[in-house]
Length: 247
Image (tube, rainbow, N blue to C red):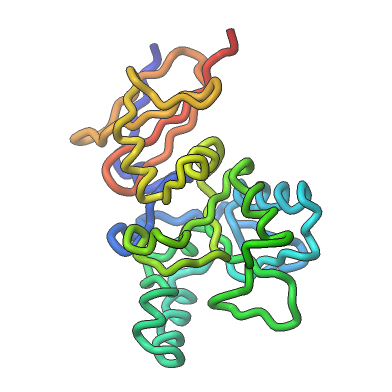
């Protein structure tokens, strides 16, 4: 067995960090940002998320029909958007659709707002209907690591109104599991806490389990030569994703 020792501040890093009104963003991935689409060079995502987005759009031949509207936002930009929304649309609208600075998924670099191509696109609430090419994207995205982050009926859990245009990169197979089980990221983070290294969640040849935060550092034991990913959850521990060797 190989011992992996993680600094506890790594809890704030990874594709599965939960960022919402209760849990603020504690780290930045600015050095990993790239253009989400070469036609929109100022809209940025983390490299893995940008690559996955392009793969989805190529898979469904939607590069001209679906356009990125808003990706990474730095603290200053999120603050400006929040304040402008308060002035223009009021507190009730802003609370529903615009996260507080420091609590916005857009500051993670793993969230993207998408819109159906049009000459006039609403920046805050772009059109992304549940039919046509947009629905094809929505159905295909989980196979590439993306989930619809704020679905209808989950508003009390996410703290954000239904946003059919907002997608979050969490990585595969987590995205597929969340879609299959109809779980938001809040629910998934709690669900995985029931999965241990002895009794992991399995998805094909992949094992997923939770490891709680240690007192000063966190020690995780893995098989030698194991292929794995470890993400903090930004709450209280780590989520381990390990690929078993095919028999």
